[in-house]
Length: 550
Image (cartoon, rainbow, N blue to C red; front, side):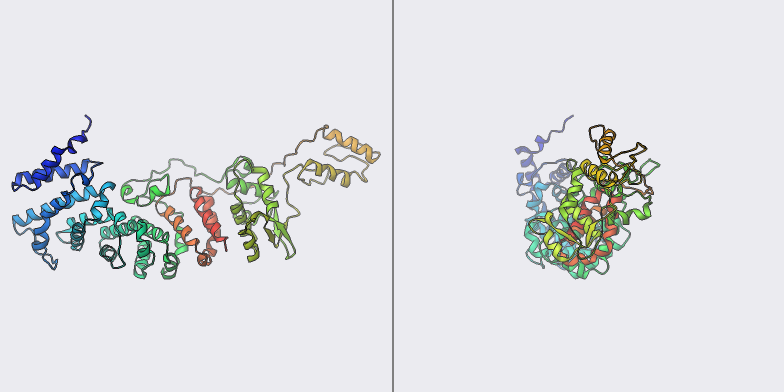
């Protein structure tokens, strides 16, 4: 039977709730609380604006507890020593239980966040020792404070909300620590809080560093989300994070890119993962039943591959030597098939080599100029003047220094099949010119492939060569060359949780030029991870691209 939500939103329902809460009859009050608890669980679109006085009416039931049971100094007294005290505490639990349930609805967090009386009581509740008999009440208060965080406006660094959450970071209760980290992360989403939160706290950074080093995935994921969110703010948080972090943060984050999560489910977007650990903590990632792990595709047929394998294959297929994976990475980076290191006098225009690549894959979404230049710069570091030129108004006209075309590079055009030649060319016209100038000047016999016909003079030789091309020049495809690549595991799964947040944090830190020196030892490892884990490669390419901007 369909659930009729309308019965809970009419005037009769509102009037009955208000009258029952203000009644002196215990049965009426019990009915109101039991109804509100059930309703707060079931309703998905109830706004507290429908009953504006509901919050204050509920909080009226907590006055005696906070004034007499807890006392003005908030010291814990002996609870449950009488039935009346027990009933008072249970009623307070019901109040905050109802408000907690309503705080999960986005339409209600604004009204709860600006309610000063509620905030004051939440701070008192959260100050209760978590290991006392009031632990359940403290957890309800923490959940509400975490849920309303996006609508909390901080006045200064001494704001009670901020100081309370930071204090909880240094407790020994894991639930408190997790709730505090998430609350601090969510409060930073509000743009008006940037001026307060854009500057790092040394003690908090060191505390987050401790969370990243312990074997607790949920805690580490929450700490990473905190660092990512704060590094996205305007201010000097990123600079202070690198300065104050007690260890090698870039190295740690690079290692996290290959982390295998057991908590966070695959996510279709970055936004779906951030702040998503609590809802996913009981979901296990299913293990693959496949006995064979995915591997790097056959780069021989690179024309049909997607990036970045197509680009790697294009470079690698120019070589006739065989090699295994131990040489694969350094070979792909150096690009020795097309270019080689030169002297100070050797230069080449970037658009020439880029045009050669685009000529093959221009209609198939090739790598962009920035990514292409990043690959080249890793192999052939350029002076600052070249960097300035590339970052100028016409980057494609950049003149690369200390690099030249390799004399042994294999072109994509036809190949000369004259005995002992096997030279490649960019076009058929270049091949014909080569045959006439190189092979037919002094030759008395045709040596094209297995032909042995005698040639009397050059004119006759030219006429004879036309028979080999059948009066219509066809593009000669490069001979298929094979090479050995040792199979390595490729993780095609979606990235979420720790790996994704680590990649986003690396990107934020790389935007600051003074951090680039911390990345230098990890450029090769970052590129390798991009190959082994394609789903995170787009974030790594962004990081590598930032490192090329000096």
